[in-house]
Length: 96
Image (cartoon, rainbow, N blue to C red; front, side, top):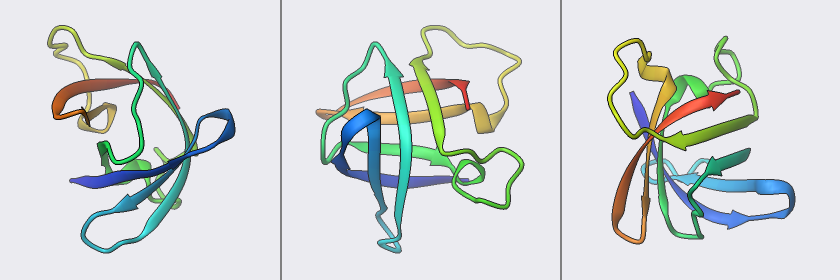
């Protein structure tokens, strides 16, 4: 299941402060987006496994790139979405 996160702050070294829309829980992650430049108030949807410190998938540094064409062998945890200035982009996790 994906969590809807609003970018609240972007700090030094790509440190993103994200806030879950429903619960207002805050997450601090280092994120890099190849070819995209998110800004404060943009929306990121990540698989909850990437945010759960107990999950084998979780780290605190992720790199994403835009998915240009469908890839059959991608797991759900490897996909994310970001809405930048009202335009939705499908992302694939390439690191982290």
